[in-house]
Length: 223
Ligand code: C5P
Image 1 (cartoon, rainbow, N blue to C red):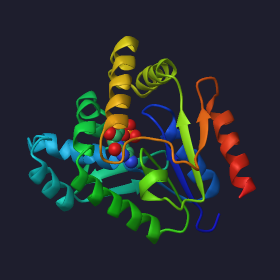
Image 2: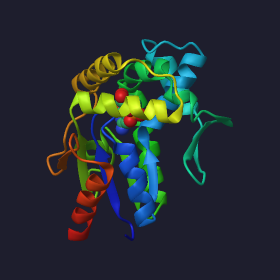
Image 3: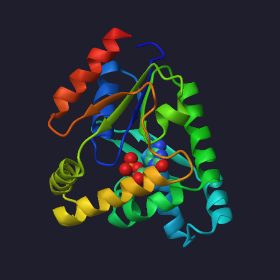
């Protein structure tokens, strides 16, 4: 797995981050959650009361923002400056606002630069996001497009919220929010969510995590 680069893209709540974490552990490579970076920016913007329409101020915030990750035994912790925002960036208010901030081109340029730098500085990485195979790592060794029906994703998010003790919206609201975010992320002008032409598509609607992981391991073994 020396210098292996894996890109995992797909819509929200398709299981990307869980699978990416498992792969990173199994292959002893670094995991980068790019969504957490856009969420961290959104958290800072809401705190500073900087509107997504104020592109100049958002861009300045993005370039000044010091995001870093720290590995814990069980999960990766996300910090903005020295504040631990791991849980805060998962709140519904962030989830609802993040697509508007991440649609700004200058913001994406800054984030993509940071992501490529991290990839360059590590030997072996798995990144999950929306534009990893298409923009961030176009030469990745393996590109996976992980998807599932909105219903399946809403059910998983609901179960996950309950399991982690987060407050949760109803199943119907989660499904509505998931569809809205899919639309926004797929229709935006700047690096919209789409399959890379050389990506392997996995529809996980009727697959459990082990099945998805094994499917990807099969592909890695072919490399
Ligand atoms: O993956 P997650 O759901 O945490 O991502 C939150 C949001 O960040 C997405 O809905 C999308 O708007 C944005 N995002 C992005 N590009 C990425 C990762 C996330 O635009 N590579």
